[in-house]
Length: 105
Ligand code: F3S
Ligand code: F3S
Image (cartoon, rainbow, N blue to C red; front, side, top):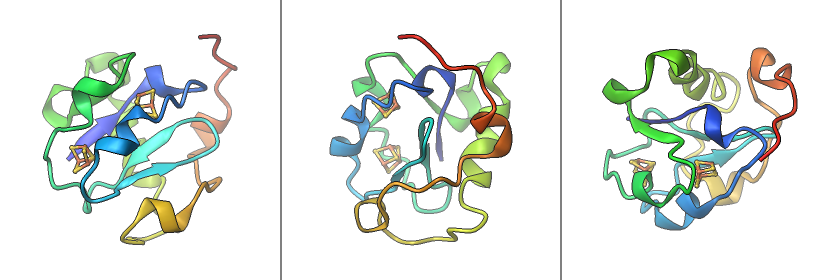
């Protein structure tokens, strides 16, 4: 799977959403999250993010390692909805993400 990391926080550019063929990039309050089971590893989202927030799971920079789990934990209650557009924005951000200081971009 691919993972969205810290640069997305409070930016939510959403260019990635347009590229995903399986609609597996879900919107939270502070950032977007890639569904770890629905992502088919096509990689189309990664180059279009203007702040390089998206990484293949094995390539997530060490300082953002916790974001790999955040992209899993966001779906604890949602499960596997099978489509971000029909799900819409939800407030399932992990507590530690919700608690991050506001980011200026
Ligand atoms: Fe975030 Fe980049 Fe997508 S900022 S919403 S991961 S294009
Ligand atoms: Fe979609 Fe990116 Fe995965 S475009 S299928 S979330 S690699």
